[in-house]
Structures are given as structure tokens and as C-alpha cells.
Length: 300
Image (tube, rainbow, N blue to C red; front, side):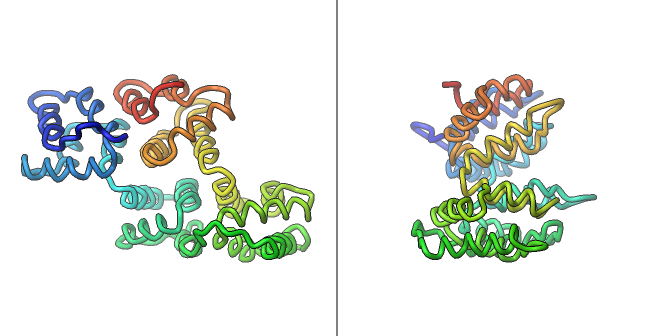
């Protein structure tokens, strides 16, 4: 959040002190970075470089470890670069983290996709879920709020005919409608689809598709219906059962902290009957827990 009386030079001095001598004052880092906006953190990085002559990110990397380090480094990145960094991590090494690719590409606006594609452009492309085929589609989403009633009916009919009404599914037709039309229009398409088919579009996708493609379409539909609901589900999935999928927890908390965290918290409580704060508190520990709880904000 926006820090009152923000002073990048003072923050630089406090961060320098936190890393001076033996050991690191993690509490000082936690008191500063989660309480600044992304733009303010960029100013802190610049002020640190001017005052100390070193890169703040490099200094922190040499001092910190584990999940706490991952959160701190993520907070210091601008949004498109953080997305690009997460995409690169998802496709490097053996196997691809398809769920990460889908989460990022299905939930970002067309302008956000363009920015992350530019940030990513130096990396290699993956064909795991035809990532850049999908991102090119999503780049073209209409960002207006206009609903064309006649076109919505036609879109619903064409999706129905591409799936439920035929042998085999024409995925390209689904992609074209889901990735190009604006949100308000698609909500109307989903209504019309329900009337034509007697099913929710999510149920049809589950019946008609499988594997990665099913995951892609479900993520796009859920993000259109409710982005905070989609992220609440991702967070819940990352913490329920045995163990925690820290990569999801970190990515969502870092990337949404300045966008729709309050809405996500409300959806989480409404859907799961417990606060996000209590889930994080019960599932994590140490400085990692403390910094995530700062990003989450207090329980209501």
C-alpha cells in the first residue's frame, strides 16, 4: 500500500542498516517493502544504487534465503517482469508448470499480456500449452464494456455447436470467442449458452475437454466470471491438504497485493468460511509467514 510521507532515501538507509554486519534484520525489511507500492519500490532501488553503488536486489539475494527471499525479490520487480520471470521459471528444466502458465495468461488483461510478452521476449517459447499461441489470442481481447445482444446469442450458439452438439469439439471456435470478446459480452454469452444447452459453460467444458485444454478454458471462464474468485480458489488449493504449494501462494500474494487483494480476501471468506489471513497463518512460519501476512493485511 501507499506509504505516507514516503522517503526512498530513508528507506535505503534503513535497508542498508538491516543488512549491515553479521546477520540480517528481517523485521526491518518486513516493516518497509510490503508497505510500499511497486512504483515506490522502484524508487527505493534507484535510491539504493545512488547511495550505496550496488543493486538492492543483489544485496538482498546474498543476505536472504528460501521462500522469504522469493517474496522479497518478487516485490521488487515491476509487474510485467515478475510475470515474465514466473513464466520462465514455469518452463525451464524438466517438465512444464502448466498451471502457472494458465494462471498468468488467463488472468491478465490484453494490455498486461502485451507488457509481459515484451518483458519475456528474450526468453525461449514453450509449446506446453501453446503458450504464445494463447497469449497472442489474449492480446487481442476487446477491452470495452459494450454488449452486442445479437452477437452474444450467435456466439453462444456457435460455441454450443462447436462442442455439445457435435462429435468432437472445435476448440478454435471456443478460443476465438473466449479470448477475443470483452468481459461484459462474455457474461451475456454464458447466460445465453445456459439457455441453449441447459448447462453452465463450465460443466460443458468439463464434459467436452480434458487435460491442459480443459484447464485453459476453465481458467479463462472463471477469470471472466470473477477474477478475485479465481485467485481465492488458487490460494485455497495452494494451502489445503498436506503441505503448501509455496510457488502459487507467493505468486498470487505478490502479484495481486496491489490490485485486488481485498476482493480476494472477501471471496475467500465467502467461499471457504475462513479468512485468508488465518489460512496463511496456519500454513506458514517464520519471516515468510510475517511478510505474507503483511501483504494480506489484517483480518476483518
